[in-house]
Image 1 (spheres, one colour):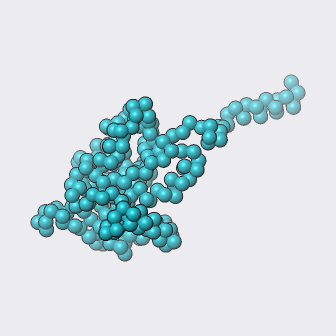
Image 2 (cartoon, helix red, strand yellow):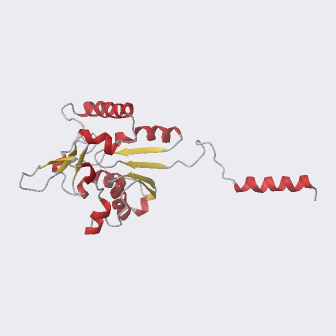
Length: 221
């Protein structure tokens, strides 16, 4: 066999091993459902959403209850099940033959885990992006230890809201503004932050002019 023939066969074999990436118009369209982290909303995915849609993916970004532009009063959301209801309702209404790719960030991972236990047959894949991964949620003392970030080095970073009265457990918590960039947006430029909140303010003004955006935790952890 000539040297030229051997080299040609080697190149052909290598080309078969390499993955091929067809143009996105011809690829199977995946439906990605993006779940925000604590204190955020669907708005925080806006850059990623644009990139994914431009690549041919179908994308849904959900506001969990009391988050983003959802109209629910955060101080009336007392359980995780109530907080996660928008995702559960969305999956309940999916056609039986449709599967989605769930993507969760931060505490959004708990929403994914809850959905997996309920709708395994409707979930093609679950992607945890720096997200909480607890098999059964916050069920044990160790779960709380593993799943809650330790912010003690920053001091008192949140303001608690006692929607049921001062003698009852807090119903929500707002991260103080001077800690938000340091803890939540430490990898974002100030220009990006201004852009984020302009979008959020625009969305909320269309929804209800009297409600202001807050970095707020609602419901059970």
